[in-house]
Length: 592
Image (cartoon, rainbow, N blue to C red):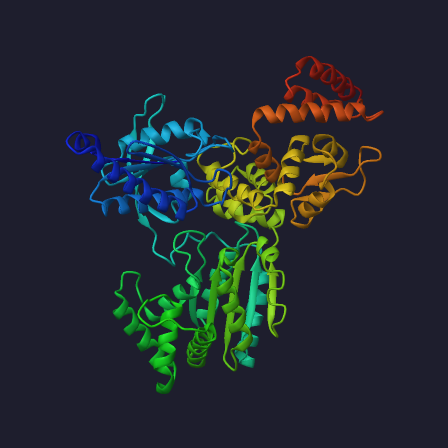
């Protein structure tokens, strides 16, 4: 939740013409809405000179806290351009979200304690400043620089609320501290072999590393980059952004700016000069003027006349990289290709296809949904390798957790439990380890970072598949096709289950415990837990009752599944029925 409020505007309005006040508010609302939408937020409402927005509602992105902070800083900066002053706050937590709501309906989009706390934090912010709560700080601290503030005494809160002041986004290229790399020796060896082949054959190679959020794509890339740089290679990196100015070729522009030492605040003429000097170093004088012109267009410097044909732009990019790699072996990294625009993807494939006779490796990092968007990616290339990152094994997860827990004496059982719960995801191991060291129990609420990463995966699913997954989460870690059919009917059910299995959310069990039915299991317990928590309590109760009735109707199954039925009747709000099955389950346990 993002709250922004103008400072001292009420006093100014008392002495101003009403039409001037209206025009000022319209301008303020317009810039606030523009910045909020730029970062993927939804405008909740305007109340006089207060603005309220929500991030991660309707669709979760996994980095919604960072988006909200960036949007808040952008709004405060834009408001300053209107000769106004504002203060703001961002708070993160669970909320009940209404689908048919927002400014158009006048109804609240999100309701809950997270909203009230955000409002209280906003009143404590200094003029021109943006204050954040603890969960927001945890989620965004690797992307935003923060300054600790005294805790805020918030109305309605028993304990003071911890607070931080958002200073500015972290400079591009800086990232979270490296945790120890475990279990990626095979992938690192493969990348090293590809690199050595590209050096020896002087032929470019495109590598696509595919894996879910937190699985270790960036960590693998950093380890590999350090290795090749230690062997005398040059390194350039660009990241595709899901928000802000998503100009075409944005990641390539970032890459070129890094190679030419061009800063974001450099004036266009100065940037153009730096680019020209870079091109002079790597290409013959006869090519410098034309290549510089087209690269400046490609990187959005805004100095040269537009080109009529993008082939000229692509050829200039090719010649720049060929020239650079002819002097020194070159490794190029494109992060987050799943957020790339089509034009950038076309450029990358063009470079991988057409660059000749130089030692160059291009590595793209992406999530699995990228394959749905670009199924033919790299298929026509002579040298393309896809590396899929699998979860760590239980032993590897244990080793990673042990290394992260410096004082691990006496924690063997807790580390084993952590390794099991993390499902082999290094980010989850890291965050669950942090929670453990801060005194949280592993059986309690998941860290927000873990929930955000999984929620983003769920929201990237097609609507029908996501709906089936949410219904399946009510049944439990194990579920049956027949129960799902009772919950939602047969329509598109098999297609949705197939899509979930292909995307590795669920697995079909070879033999079912319910005769004549098909049994499935959630691949990860955490996916089931987050999906279940997404459903409002009222809907959960309805679905638990449907599940219990279906199992009761399956002849001969009720006694065998007494504990299962007791759970569903209790969650459905039917304690008397639950007690009958609890007693039956107790008798079975006693017999056992």
